[in-house]
Amino acid sequence: MYSTQTLTQPVITAAESVQILGPRKKQVGLFGGTFNPVHNGHLIMASAVGTQLGLAKVLFMPDNQPPHVDAKQAIDAADRVAMLRLAIAGNPMFDLELTEIRRGGVSYTIDTMRVLKKLHPDTDYFFIIGADMVNYLPKWREIDALMKLVTFVGVRRRGYVPATPYPIVWVDAPVIEISSTALRERIRTGGDIRYLVPDAVRTYIREKGLYLD
Image 1 (cartoon, rainbow, N blue to C red):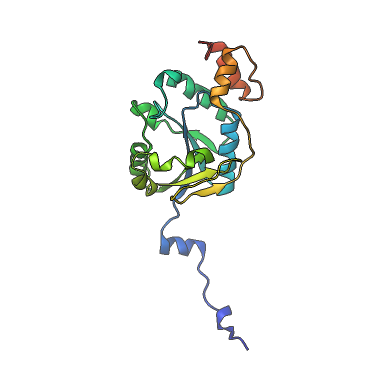
Image 2: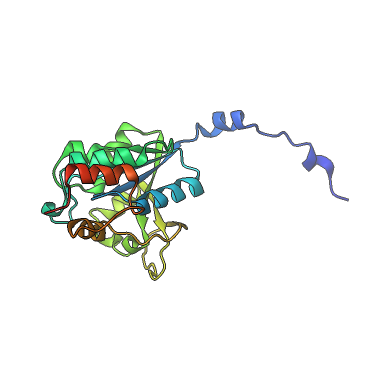
């Protein structure tokens, strides 16, 4: 017969486990990008990651000037931030992280994460990237150091086979084939972007006359 001792061992409560192991860190997602403009695909991806991983927040983090994009292609940061505010309004999971905008210059993720980890040592960050970006991770500045500061979350995408030596947390999201590049061209040529971006963002673009040049 099995011993009944295993049934009478003391149970460690959640409160006691916190005393032993320390408080559980806050888990926050970071979704970086130019968001030029933000579109519904971005929102769906962020929502899927936040929900599947049970994150406290997903912070949209617009870059000031991405290292891989001609600065002339991006509209003023103030307009990109304004559109993001409109896009995430009403979703308590979403918020903004404007460290890179405030710092100015070229936005390198390693610099940003060193700042954020120093400011928020009680937070574990999950950096969200699309499947198409995973294979480029070896080219990121100081990627080995960056891996110690964040957990990368890859969103699966049909047609992209990840090949990376780095650990990635994979999540699934509805496949929404929208690109900011295609949106800008559609706007420039007089096309309709209804249902591709939030209505408030569409109105903002039209009223400001963005992407017409």
